[in-house]
Length: 382
Image (cartoon, rainbow, N blue to C red; front, side, top):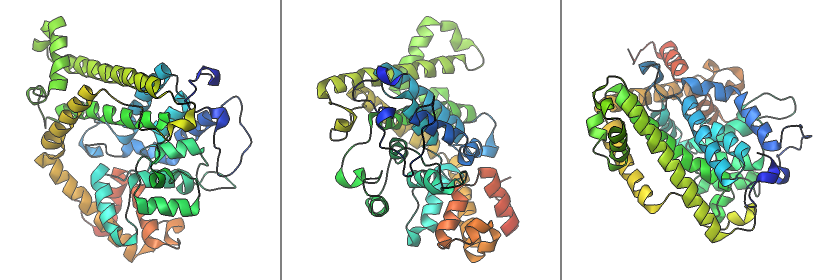
């Protein structure tokens, strides 16, 4: 999309707040395209292919990973951004980078690392994603990180505790941590990625949960949001009920995703028309404008409750989660006791606990398991 095609409240790459370190422009790309390209070529982005979404990487080849999830979020986000005349390139950059700070083993790894860092400032995966693009990627001769634009960095930092926001602002006044102190909103593009993220993982967690056998089609069929679209598919294609394979599921999920994104576009267009922000900066002082209709929000909440109860807390996943937490905790203890077991740039850091957290957070599932076996002699997963 050309900048001239953007709505007045969209983030215009010609008027970015810029990079922390000034750089010459790189035509024909705009600044947010340039951010996207840097993210795609980063080491942290490549590692996402072997990082857990819900199911651990070794449990199957067809389950989502952090990489495939990020690509799905980017696809949904770009489609909605185009319909709303928002900045597609910025949406894509944020979507592709939003999980760069996730640990191995998904939320289990994050929780374990947070516990390990409890007396050292804790661990937040959104803050870690920002840390990756600001400091930990080492690719350029004159600065650390990727030196991304403010708007991309702001979108990456979806959540942040007040304590960490204060630390960020001390280091960078008016940086991406400021909004968590003054109660303002991020760009519409960041708001869009936040909601596309939720819509994407709800749908693909259904798919992965069914593929794993931990939930059944009969169980998810009791959830109204899913049942509505399954029943519509069967009314049009009754033969699918008897067919082997996954056509019924795929068509149901396709319609579920399309309906949610259509609702998002319509609801957001209405909220923008009602609020009529003068420009992108005016959005920041308003309530969230990228939204779903109240009815769909309620149905999504019901779907989330089902997934938490029947999938995320399934005994098999709980067992895997416990083992993953043990791997992370024992890795942390081993590196803290013997920093020289890490590469020199981590082992020689001034803040060893934070360096250990950085090193572990950057690991893929399979590398974490190899390191755990090397350091402890134990194999916790078959």
